[in-house]
Image (cartoon, rainbow, N blue to C red; front, side):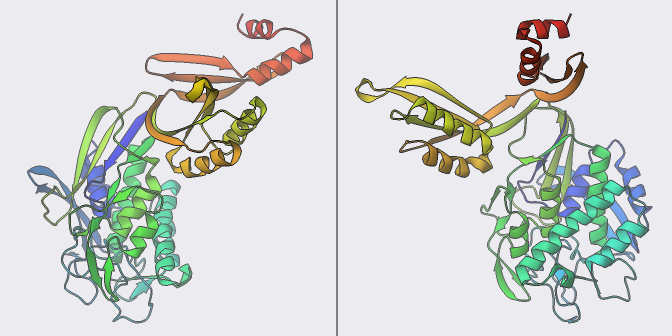
Length: 438
């Protein structure tokens, strides 16, 4: 299985992600030529070599009408929010950008071209653009596949929804400022196009370092992560750390949330390519996103194991509890006989679930069992890739479950289908199974 792992130990921004992914291609220069050939108004992209803390990687430089847009509308400060800031005051040109322009030079990723105001049409005549304007440019003027177009708009949708939530405005009233709009289109389109080219079966994203401290914006001093970024990253594992500044921008957050299959540690894989996407600012740690592409056998993930002891429940009550847990999404539920204090016979009830489901499972364990306490542990789980196919037989359709990976392949007929045939034909399960594999 082709797996892409994104190491976001120094956050993420649109241009950093694009540069890291471009380095995974056999010919990054050819991709840059393709990006420049899309016809994004006034945009020219360059992939330049950059080094941080002794590590060499690439930086995606976006020029709009020959200039790299690094200033926030009427300010000269570097923008940390790589164009992800939607300006919610469509007509007030003096209003800098909500929380997203941390104009105080402490933004880690001032590599991120200032705003993600994606102004679709005439970059010089419109000062703001709406989601409808962006959609018109992406869907009608850029020669992209339907999938890439859908990905680009889905990423913008996440940013617009976050800005809407942060500022209490309907999405339809959220506007992107003109300055920096085209380089935002370039960054987001580049990442979506690269994802299509790489076509990973799974995208694993590390816990995201968002930075710490505060950022200054037009509305005052705001905490890191900024409100829109925090809203986008709901459900993802994030952390602060000692580095002062904003490491994850709204655009970077939206791209990660859109493409991540799951979050976690780097899986065991046969590594094929490594890419480093560099930011502009220098920190004690290498300011980059690292992308690692490789092959994994089967799949591995993290599961939560919840366990409790019960000594005063009937078998029927335990069976009902197990049914409720499985119906609520537990991956597996099983029991084992144990001996407790004073030689009391009891039952150990264990269940496996996804980490994000554990609180709900704990609640159900207390509701449907008599336990007074639940233990939790996180486990690394290695599983075979599984699939289900349907086979037509003289007795009807039978589902066949297959599993493969780690050098093994297994196949098994669905019990319920065989049992149904056995009941109707009066034959044994063994006879039915044998007749399917003569």
